[in-house]
Length: 140
Image 1: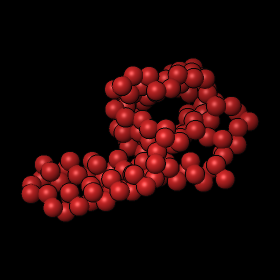
Image 2: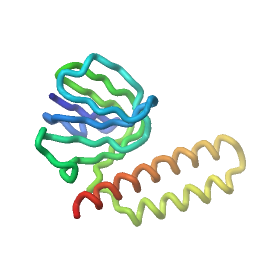
Image 3: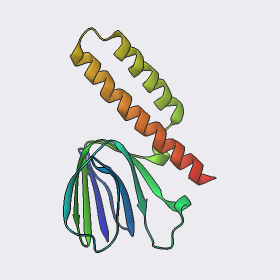
Image 4: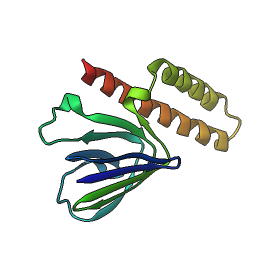
């Protein structure tokens, strides 16, 4: 099954894979070859890719994604999101510091618009920390 992960910056991943685990509005879904046609909204969360049927969970490749759209066909998946950060590229200390700054911005926000911006930043960095933790745990 072919997977394309596309962000605003361009194609982030273009590969063959066996299983995709993706966060959606309805909850986490797993997609395998031969899946029925489906278009669904992606929510911020961890996207996991199993490249081969025999790969163990410790070999999953993780991405922290923002919201977007997932288009599924029996032999192709296209994930269209604003951002996708590879688990190995995330530096936990930087994400933790950014989360602290976002929490402070939310607490000091003068109006609802600024609180919403801060909430989006909080969500982004919480997802990045979750993916970094998954990546670190699976490297052991």
